Image (cartoon, rainbow, N blue to C red; front, side, top):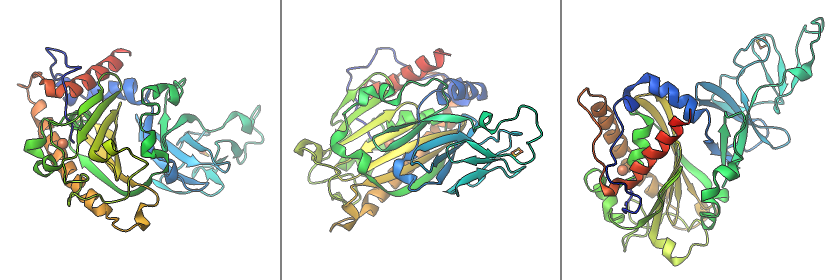
Length: 372
Ligand code: FES
Ligand SMILES: [Fe+2]
């Protein structure tokens, strides 16, 4: 993905991380605990859970969660673990539940809010009370129309965790945006290589010749250069209006954007595993799910203004194809990186000042790993 990098946060001597961070199952297991079981993780959009009972199964840090909108309209995240003998409750990856969640083993039955309301043949069990066995739940947070969950027992409120982004994207109308395309990509690379790749555009002239004509790789500047949220903007080169195959805008503007933003594209990483791309006419968000130390699944969703599909000139395929090509170029080079950094001879190499953001990303990662 594109990124021009200025040198403001660059620290002399910054080097890439050692082989074990990309090739060791032990490091992978440790980061599942230290990072994925502690962070707010994006699981989709509020509008993905349209009606009561709409649910998705989410795999996170070795756990299976049922993320569901309950009858009162709240979005909940329940561990997919029966309180009787622990059996998985749901096996479908998504769908609509009826009024209840029923265990397939002995039919313990839960409301969508997690309360246990039926437990056959438990009446003779001394001291048993339905009220003592609700589903275990994970915290759910909302930010700009996105749904996040965390396995942390006492998580910081999401507004506090996301304070550095407060108000930063208001003009892009994110809560109202309509998801219109979604692609899942299996990538044979460690999840961190994908985030690092998104965080610099030093590779753009070699890996993305088409992209470089629309977004000059030395244009723009970073405005978040340290911490869990990193990124900045690139300039869209006239006469191109957007990052699309045709170079034309594919939809009406996302919001009431100032002229300056009509000629910019913004790219941010949200630690640990979300990436957010904002163009004048469409947004794209990515979530990276780690599968193993050498495999990930990237989900990529294109979003537009809710009125865009009914307006003349709407052509999201123009943006979808542009990023689908670019994404595949990126995933391929990440897979080549994975193979190389797994070698016995690979040792950390020096970052360029144009890679100040991946270097800052690594610092944040190592800081969070060291907290445990
Ligand atoms: S394990 Fe779920 S009802 Fe027995
Ligand atoms: Fe790229």
